[in-house]
Length: 317
Image (tube, rainbow, N blue to C red; front, side, top):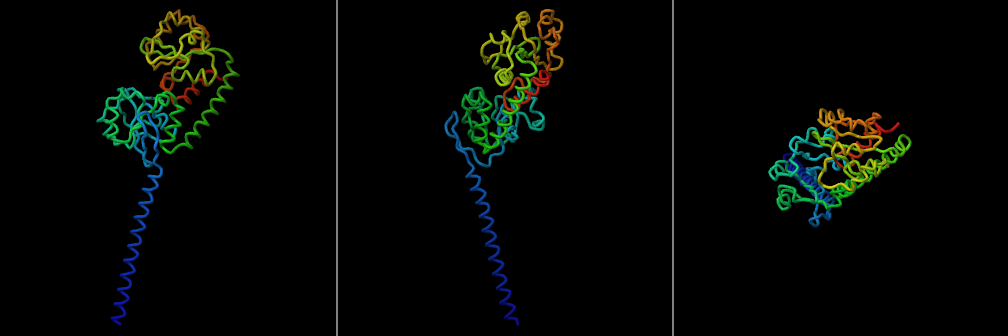
């Protein structure tokens, strides 16, 4: 009996050991499989600085000023762009709990957030650190100029590098439908009536050119007619040039979107100006004050959608 029990005990011990070995191997295989899967999702993509490989398991992303595109793809960045207290207010619904990082990307601030990926604009000289500095922290993708300047191109490129190509196509298709519907509504409501966009900061006024930020959505995509004064401005330049109140008297726009945070001095100046009050839009009560101008002064899919909503709210029937 003793011998039998001893044999049975020895057999059970050997069997248990085999199960543990097989389980261990299975665990190792699973771990290796996950690693292989992540590597298979790695993306090598061309950038301004040459080929860059983006790891398939990238999660912690810094893309200052281009958080719009990340959010459109369903990705929350690890930090958000800021100039002091100024942020992209129109994105705060999604980013209110995300810490800020200064626009020029100080290296020590980048290090604090331990990113897996850093995405920079083509003008890398505007950043505090060098490309090599950021590359030491995480894979760094520098956009080509055409990508920096086109949110549609950004959506395509970001979608490719982050394995979100299908999502990029989906949200762009939805956006195009939104533009189509909005354009039809505006055609029925205002026809060929003209509209202009003015941003007042302090006591200065900036008239948007046809391709300045979200004004391009208003004119090029929604088909709203620009007034002659806007047509005469030409293409937008990097530097903003304020326009005088006397020059604004020449603005024969049927509608004006006035971008001004609450309490801005420029609102009071226009209210008390007989020159301004004699313009068609002011005389007919067609000046629309927008207290959150941030989506109008940015570009991106979300900014564009919010701009369309602003336009429809005031101009559609």
